[in-house]
Image (tube, helix red, strand yellow):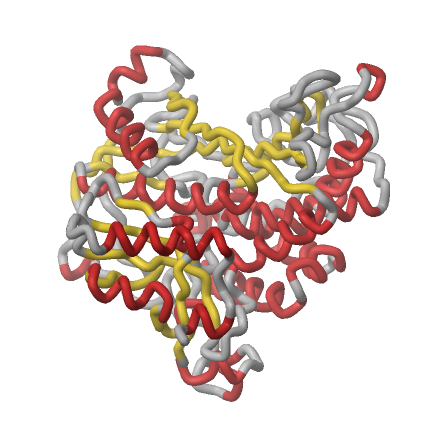
Length: 482
């Protein structure tokens, strides 16, 4: 029996999709297949197999080292993998042992920018068939099952901002190379536009060639692309996507970010989903997550109020909203997981700085849209940065929202003056967010203490490296003064 058969890892839909995938591999049109999985940062890693080998690996799995789960954003392994338990107190993680990547055939694509290459997303398992507890796609699946047990599913739509630049130098001299713990020299770039002409057609036309390239890529991948927009800042753009189930949204976000970066790289551009690049005059990018609960039985939007008297959300929607507010501080660890992302939380900036909600107000953290008879009634969470791991971001929303529903919690009144309303402030640093996460028993229980400790350990390694660097601000502030 194959690894998949031995451990019963595929559903009936996946079995059917696997047959379609095998037919595509045996057609002779594909030469290679990328078996990829989203790591703890939402970065794709994996192996590329020739098509003939991929047919066998589909049910057998692909082995990779557990150290891929041990790395911070500099790709430095931050756990003592050769100690007892590998630093995780898990024998399966000791000694840089292997885990098995098992393809989800339902995610199979042919990559438009390299049409002889297939791509499939994978889940991670130990050799005995147990799911790897640190695999973030698995964590989101666990939360979506909790909803399904209640007869519900989460629908989510994306508004993703990013910066797209023209690459002027690739920084590929030997001295530009990095090492573990210190990334190499970034690309040198120039702007595609001067910014501050929000949604003007002229600015869009300047980037039309690139936008058309990215549009075709997204549509070729089957992503539910709706709009391509000129954002406020220089070289800043926004892409919006139609609503999907939570897992599909997370899978699409992972693929979208990776595709945009790869396609831009091939055509002389540089794409970054970093929140606030250190480039003069650019501004922060955000990721707005639209969400609602749908009843599985009949597809009804459970956030849509029955009467105008109920306001913008149903009672269940208000309880879910209250849960998001209650756990906002700890959940920012997952919606804003980089040190850089906290540069965005500024008053009067169309980004939130406190945990409040408001009806159709872009200054609040949670913007509520809808009303009686509006099947698109939803909550827009404006807290996230585009670099967030989507599986963790969406999982945190389910955990927090369900706690609000279970506790019949009240979100309080709408905040019509978002930067003047008295309310709990969002964390101003990743350290503050992690402290709030560790102090939140609902989030800790939802993700598991083991995962929270694991994720915070990785993030603390990044913070420690950051604190060891002397910044330009420090040098400018103190070098002449003292």
